[in-house]
Image 1 (cartoon, rainbow, N blue to C red):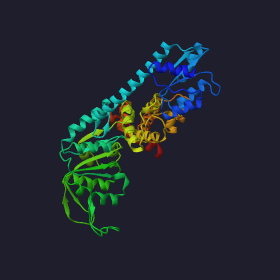
Image 2 (image 1 turned 90 degrees about the vertical axis):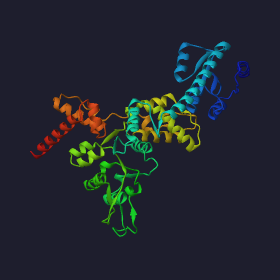
Image 3 (image 1 turned 120 degrees about the horizontal axis):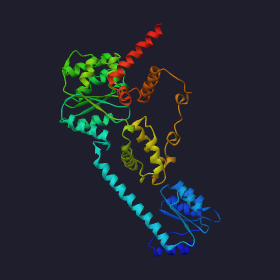
Image 4 (image 1 turned 180 degrees about the vertical axis):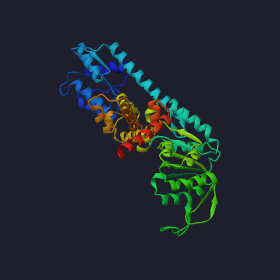
Length: 444
């Protein structure tokens, strides 16, 4: 029977390898040497349905055609549900088999063309290292193009992992000073004394460990751009020194009375709502207005889900080179899992997921089993969702809802106001009233 089927396939124009051993067939699937498996249901050592399950587990993109001498509609439906490409009755009709194989061949050709088109699209939608085609990202790109040519301060806001540093680099690369230096400082990683030395420099002997005189980043990048990441983490004292740089274009090295003039473009980034920080007294209002001459908000990944497929292709290309692999993409069910995830870590989290899956997968396509456990397991409902309903005053319902939206937005009040459908000032006023009310209740 195997030899007869091989001869039929040869006359139809298809190369085929025949075997009566299901384990040998699975080895062929594992090696990636075949795209289609045609198998009987009744076999001495393994049931055809078990072969189907194991073949799809090894390579979710392989096409399995099952044959049986005892055809029934229920068994056909069961086979298709398990992932079979077709379910044929014996003796196999030559015309039906040719039609099925031609359809599979056409599907594989279309997938190949789609991958080629996606690769071209990836190049066309690569904006200085930032990938996106969603309307919100196209707006960001348009604003960056407009702002980059003007030598002005820019404030970039967005959640952690959204790509704020990439936006800052794009602003520098498209600016008139793109040939000058681009200096980066993570303000949250350094205590005040070290941050001051990093930004402004120091002279020898100005503090313990200062064994020589060194310039700071503002001098290093003089004529270019300085990017201050997480500027919202700086102290009020440091903020006053940054204000002086912006206003007077001058700095003083730690331990030196000499004033030095610098000409730099300042780009700052934050994952905090700086306007709310100003109202809370944790950020200088004058510095905020100086930094926010132009504001660019980088959207969270959940706001641009249509970009996930492009980002996946971008990261696969990157890690195929890094790990010397030939991964073509994700299975449909793996794609569905990615689209259903909340992505609290944004693009950075997605990159980590693809990197880990690329290491783990052995086939050409990443499947659900290759993804991290937290993506495979549905997120458990939190306690607040399991609370027994009880009647509440409208003010209390509003308070609970606002705080849940704030929690979901990771404290980003601008984003929370957008989700609530109210203005930012309305949300700020409500929070100030709620804060005063809580303090008065505590005092009572």
